[in-house]
Image (cartoon, rainbow, N blue to C red; front, side, top):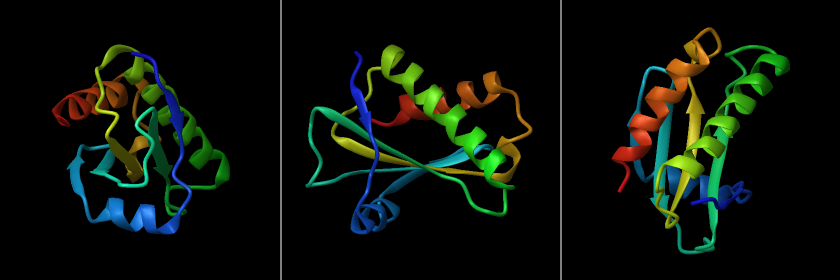
Length: 113
């Protein structure tokens, strides 16, 4: 199932997601929750990298990796479109291999039901 990915833009959406459920792995923390203002046809996913992780080049590389993983996940995993997702990257995600990050995130996304 391929669905269009959109990003969250409102501050209150981010605050509501932080009050939702979460799953952690060694590379990221995933917050997810049903939002009332969300469209059922779009997958709302946002990526956050803190400034402690590194400079802008490193942070953007992490976001590109996570965005690519989510594109693969929408093609292979039957994801719940009722939820909105927030990915917060951890410090060791930059040095990790792409395959290890992808496997751990796929494993966590299959738990979300």
